[in-house]
Length: 316
Image (cartoon, rainbow, N blue to C red; front, side, top):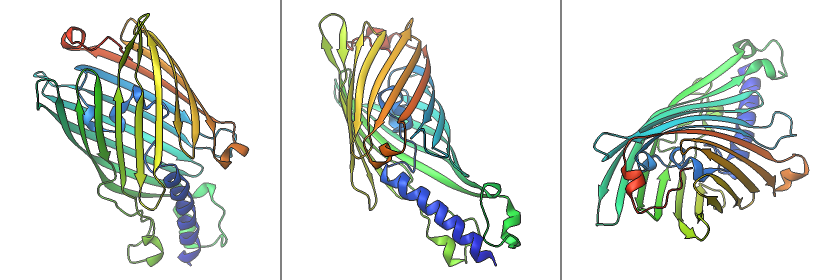
């Protein structure tokens, strides 16, 4: 009798995994990548020698029934000797009756490899939980014993590796989330139906450069490549232009997904607000009203090195 609900759950998770994998979203994707790079690559922890607390709220494909909603809170910063970075983040990703919740803590080691170039190597580890609310599901057989479960959970370990080369002008790095590649099992592992939902391996490669422009402007274009097994590579590129380290505007584009418009403001170099609106370019644009993302960030400065460096001040 368990086969009915098992199939429903497998189909539900399969659909979720399919559209999230298509958009490289078995882990959260943010339009404001430039504002919170740490959540994508733990090697950024401590790089700017400040403590960074950031909260993201993303509402994706608004207008669709049970559209995805992602909430993230992260913190990262340097150790006293500025040679190490520590960080942690939690997130929850809600789609209809399913919810994915994750938490990780990370460590990054920063090393000068030349006079002008540093490298950061990082590893993070934590847990991820998948949950399905059976109260929101319709059962083919109401008397099925499995239907009494109401809320079903699958808890598993998770890990991520990241590296980063950088100096005051540019950065180049990559990350590999979902290192363990667990399977989502809501039932007995001997049940062959429940073995088809694996967390796919992901790989990110990214780079960026800061250009100092006239009139107290700084442009920081970046390029990000996402690869998920058995899915076409997704490219993202964009840039912001910042005026006097205070106000910024920009754009980003993700192939096969969306074009984003970005706006933001920083108050007295330590409180930032950001907003982005995604214009969906895939077929989902026929059914949704786009995506909205809100960001709030607080910076706590630790070292004068941030202001004494040759890097133009662009606290975002």
